[in-house]
Structure formats: structure tokens, C-alpha cells
Amino acid sequence: MLRRLSATLRRPLLWPAPVAAHKELVRCASSGSVKVTVPLNFWAGKRRASQEKLSKEKVYEPATGQVLCYLEPCGSGDVDEAVNAAKLAYGHWSKLSGMERARIMIEAAHIIEARREEIAEMEVVNNGKSITEARLDVDSARLCIEYYAGMASTLAGQHVQLSGGSFAYTRREPLGVCVGIGAWNYPFQIAAWKSAPALACGNSMVFKPSPVTPVTAVMLAEIYAKAGAPDGLFSVVQGGEDTGTFLCHHPDVAKVSFTGSVPTGKKIMEMASKGVKPVTLELGGKSPLLIFSDCDMKNAVRGALMANFLSQGQVCSNGTRVFVQKDILPEFLEEVVKRTQAIEIGDPLMESTRMGALVSKAHLEKVLHFVNQAKKEGATVLCGGELYDPSDPKLKGGYYMTPCVLGNCTDEMTCVKEEIFGPVMSVLSFETEEEVLQRANSTTLGLAAGVFTRDVKRAHRVVEHLKAGSCFINNYNITPVEVPFGGFKMSGIGRENGQVTIEYYTQLKTVFVEMGDVDSLF
Ligand SMILES: NC(=O)c1ccc[n+]([C@@H]2O[C@H](COP(=O)([O-])OP(=O)(O)OC[C@H]3O[C@@H](n4cnc5c(N)ncnc54)[C@H](O)[C@@H]3O)[C@@H](O)[C@H]2O)c1
Image (tube, helix red, strand yellow):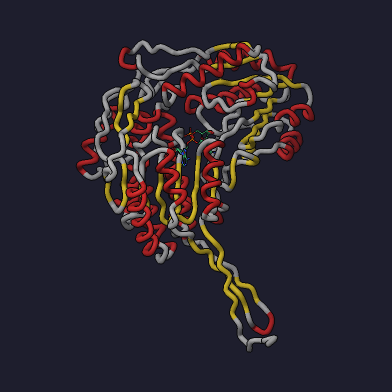
């Protein structure tokens, strides 16, 4: 029997949201039953409507195609207000000790844990991914906040002894008001992955979610506020390109952390360069997965599915170029196709669903176009790649497709060269290690890569040569918050998660201390 998730909502919430917001948001009986009417901007301590009355945009529920809410984009005046509030908050927050900041962040993590189901359901309603995955995303957000809370009190400089008893020391100082700009595939998680290290280091943040998925970032803002963060510490402004542009150009913004496509990433870098602002760029990928004939076939197939079909294939690090050694290709294809055809598609709020809806109608059409193009260029559709028509009448307007495996692919095909960002796996065959490494690296992108082999020496030799920021040996697409994540080449600059991210949200001040007289040349 399928268990409807709405049952979980009837359990008492440990920490209910403020009454007004709570009533509006939490009534998720099933897909198609939610309408969000509360304002989605948040700054200076509360939800706010935009002051500028720019034309509203429809936001859809991917599972049903129904309008979920209307997005009010923020204009420059709204952005000014949010940045000013963040500036004020920064003045207070940056003076707290790491322990004091950590206490508030840990409280936020507790609240996320208590509201896990509610946040996950809203993520599903707005993004279309399965509830099983959405819960893991909420967990990842919470873990990230816990991880950086733990690190907040460890930020320290260095002491350097100089001659004559003089010395120097370094201080790791926050940057100021940081901007976060997010993509639509992991709306809540991206907001947490950016805000957690930023806040731990003493910064404040103004976050702009994707206009396609505006609903859950503002829940995070409420949670930080409820946990005791000063008003303005984490704000949310809604909108698209224009709002993002106002943020990037704002003179009081010290840094921009961006997650999204390569073309937008280039624009962000260009805008930030006008103010010589540092950027973190988490961009797209077209990652290779190398499967050698000495692999554990069962795990290699599982890995290939994880590398392609999470979040309806809308994952930046997906290993969509699956290179399989020639002698095991038939066996691999048989198994991978069988398991792909068994993926349960449907209402993303159902426990049994493993693949929900793609994020928008336009995106679904784009992905299907890639499949058609692949056929024209000579690839063979081994399964899927078609519109999926759910039997449930309320899902008829949703954006579903069957997960696709493409065989007979070659390196020159569009499906092998371009990021599709949908549930489409391109399978290629190879003969030698040297050959596959050369082909795997033959791309301007370098976000992730994976290798399946039982030969431990080969595994390490291969990852040494792969030009990618995150490499997986005998697994794929796991992102523990303790380890850095980010890309080589055009897949990005900087890292998220792990200790190193502290360096991307702080600046180093060096202090020289003279213990003797000034040795003047004049
Ligand atoms: N590397 C990573 O960690 C990672 C994670 C998730 C998604 N992605 C990438 O994101 C892409 C999909 O997301 P998307 O379609 O939302 O990307 P996108 O580049 O279209 O948009 C990303 C964000 O940038 C904003 N934006 C657009 N133009 C802007 C401008 N001129 N100035 C400021 N902001 C602007 C959008 O409103 C949105 O919030 C894929 O390429 C995917 O690989 C990367």
C-alpha cells in the first residue's frame, strides 16, 4: 500500500512556525492542494511584500502544472532595504564570539529537524522531486548548519615570531554582506550550503532563490530568525536576472556566491569584477563515469543510476557520459535498462515514487528536444525519453517524462557534449584506460567524475588524471558536508562545504607588532 505523506503532517509539530505563515503553508494534503499566498520576501526580521509593485510572475507546481503562487520580483529599492538590514545585522553578528554564533546556528538546525517533513513537502510541491529525496536535501541543509556551527569557534589566525622580539599575527575576519544566488534544483539545500559557512564566519547574507522555486528559502530565513539571529542576518529577495543584477552591483555587497549555469556564472563574475568582489561559482557539468570490466557490476549499475536519475536528472554533478569498457557493455546495458524501466514515476509526494516531475514545462520540452536530437544524430534510445502520462487525473498537467538510456553514443553527439540537465544517460564504449581518460577529459567542464573498478591501483591512477573537482571511486553523487564540493575548469571557482570554505567567506588581516624602535632610513 502506498502511504500518503499527508499523514505525517498531522503529527504535532515540535516547533510551529508563526501562526499566520503556518496556516498558509502547511496544508499539504496531496499534490495539487497547496496554494502559497504569504509574501515570499524576508528582510529585517519578517516576511514582506515587494514595495515596488513590479509585474507578478506565475510559479507552478511541477507535479500538476497548477499555479502554486505568484512571485513579486524585488526592485532596486527592495534590494537596498534588504542590504541595509543585512549591514546592520552584520555590525552586531560579526562582534559575537564563534561560540555565540554557533549557539544560534545549532538552534536553527534543531528547528529544521523539527520541521523536516513540512520543509520537504514544500520543496516537493515547488520543485517536483520525490519526497524521499527532498527529505535528504533537508537533512543535508541541517547537517551543513551543524557542521559550520561547530567550526565557528575554531576560526583562528597565526602567530609569527620576527627578529628582535617583534612579531606578527593574522586574524581571519568576515567579509561583510554576502550575496547568495541559487539554482532551482536544490532550493533549500543551496540556501543552507551558502548561508551556513557565511554566518559561521560572521557575515550576513542576502539570498536570491531561483524565480522558479521561491518557496522554501524564506522558510530558512524564518528559521534563523526564530533561532535568535539578529533581524536582517539572513534575508531573502525574490526575482530573476534584474534582482540578481541589483544585488551583484550593490556597493555594500562584499561577495557573491552563485550556483547556476555557466553562462550566468560568467555574467556574475563580470558584474562582481566591477567592484573587485570575490565570487564563488558553482556551475554546470557534463561529468564522465568510467566503468571498467573488472568492476562489481551490481554496484556499477547502481552507481550509473545514481549518477543520472536523482532529482529527475537535474543535478549539476551528474555523470551523464557513461563510458563502459567494451567487453562488459552488453551485460551493463541489459541491467541498466531493466533497472531504469523499473523506476516508479508519479506523484512526488508518494512514498513509493522514485522519479517525480521535471521543474517546468519549458525545461521538460528542452530535455525531450535533446533526446530527439540524439536520435537524429544516430544514438539509439534503449528506453524512455518520452512524455509520461500519469493515470491520476490530478497529475495530468504535470511535467513528467520517462528516464532515458541512450546507446551507440559517440563523443561528437550533442547529447554527449552538452549539459541536458534531465533524466538522460548517454552510454559510450571504450577499450583502454588511456583512451577513456583522454575522452573523459575532453570537455571544458570539470565538476565531477567517477570510476568503477576493483583494481585499487587503477582507481587511484585514474582519479589522479581526471580533471574534475569531485571524483568518486566505486560510488557516485554523494555529498557529505564535511568534504569540499566544486568544479575544475568552467564548472566553477571556489568550493562549498568542508573546512576550506571558511577561506571563501573570510579575509586575512596581518598585524605587525614592533617591540623595538623604528629602524628608519630617513
Ligand atoms: N555546481 C553546482 O553546485 C550546481 C548546483 C546546482 C545547479 N547547478 C547548475 O545550475 C544550472 C541550472 O540552474 P538554473 O537554470 O537555475 O541556472 P541559471 O543560471 O539560469 O540561474 C541561476 C540563478 O541565477 C539567477 N540569474 C539569472 N541571470 C542572472 C543575472 N544576469 N544576474 C544575476 N542573477 C541571475 C537566476 O534567477 C537564478 O537564481 C545547471 O547548469 C546546473 O548544472 C550547479
